Image (cartoon, rainbow over all chains, first blue to last red; front, side, top):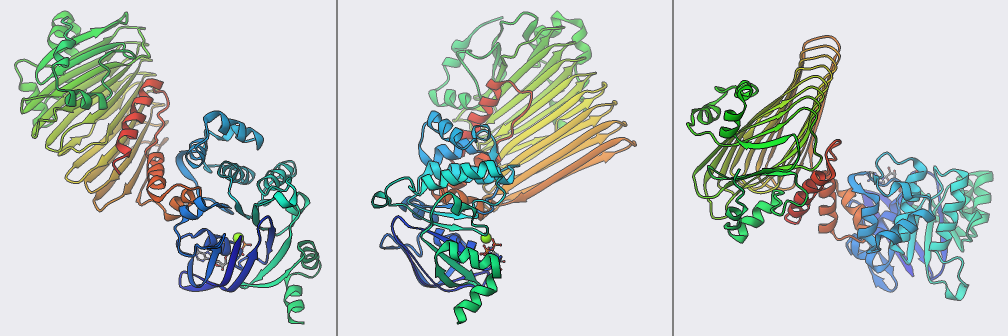
Length: 243
Length: 370
Ligand SMILES: Nc1ncnc2c1ncn2[C@@H]1O[C@H](COP(=O)(O)OP(=O)(O)OP(=O)(O)O)[C@@H](O)[C@H]1O
Ligand SMILES: [Mg+2]
């Protein structure tokens, strides 16, 4: 579904991602871990095509089509969706209005969708303005539910979310990724950035990757990786790679 | 008084469309009264609410002697050459609205001033809300599509009595060659509320105004909201001023300005003359194409216990905001328009729903042009 090859990405003239390779098949969910500032969010933003994240070499191929230089909205139309780690606030734009513009759903349908993630009170609020940490995450999930992307990128979906809402988020994400569907009928794929791995309590991930200093240093079973990192930190990943 | 809506029906369809842009409702569905003046002729006055009268100024002055005390009191007659010009007229025209004690209507009263063929239109309007009265005015000012040049001089004096509330919403729809010089001021007594809203999204040659609210009674409130777009060739010099002259008074001046090539000067002045007063000026500007937005907020405190502040920002739409919406599938143009629409969205507390809707509509119609 997504094939990233030899990707180099610069931000502000400085190379942040070096030679990244990542392949995510149809129906697969991958987890991306790594220390702060290692380039995880940068990778997601480069895949979405945000300005300022300049691909200097390499390619991003989505469903067999090269998208490295497509504008953001065309990637969205092709089925790529993203949950932002820190989305901007937009004064005067109601969350409900954005959902309508992004999905062409009726008001009632939007209302029902909002209820499913306890967000009906926020539909009439200005987008992200004064939203709490957990509200931001739920609003992002709600937007993705409206958008129904086939490839979902989630940047730390569990950060700032309380225990009760974590279950709700976990289920919503599992649903977005068709985790309830039989494996042969599952077509949606995902890439999830996580520090804590809490999300793995709600859905199974097929593969894990560790990014350090802008390079993917390790691939493997996500739970195994999580265990190693919890015990020995990321330096353990570096050591293991060197062995 | 004569009821001659037929006069308005003589206007060309294009002109009527333009009038509709200013919020004029010929069918009077959500209006409690009307006043129409074309050039210097009053063609229609009506009001269907008990205790509220709408009269041409001449007739009003004949009917009520006390009204004489409300002429050129809020706005000084010799303020400038435009007020002097209006004061010099032998046959002053304009509307007088009197909301007698305790009368109230949430439905707005509409005043429509249309510049059809004469080079200069002058009006002198007086709005009096006696104790406890509540009225909402919507004045649409527009010029005929066939009018290339002309000037509109409008003096409006507001007298907001004890615990009375007056809102005045003005939506302008002129042509690129028209110059407009409104001169207005309000005197607000104890517990009174004066809200003034100004919207101008269409081309105009020159608009120059600086209305003032004198909050002379305890706890009086004044609020000005201005939403404007400066198109190429337009010169908008807009300000609003509040004088906090009694304890407990407060004022807020809010402006959203967009230039697509025109010049906008956004002035604001709050004068804290007394203690226990509060005032805030907020001006936000967006430069979409090279033009000028010049914000000049002034706050002037003269006593301990007055709290005044201002914030002004001029800039562009942040790229990451546009891309955020693009990531949800909106193309760049739609994303930009959506953010601009949000930027212009000033919710005015205390404004009746029909009027807020009118303002929203005026913005929605203009939004397509960015
Ligand atoms: N827009 C930007 N401008 C300047 N530097 C940037 C920008 N975006 C990313 N960087 C830099 O690139 C590096 C990688 O940042 P990135 O946000 O991708 O890290 P991350 O792995 O997501 O970290 P975290 O776990 O803290 O979210 C950091 O040094 C960061 O400061
Ligand atoms: Mg990050």
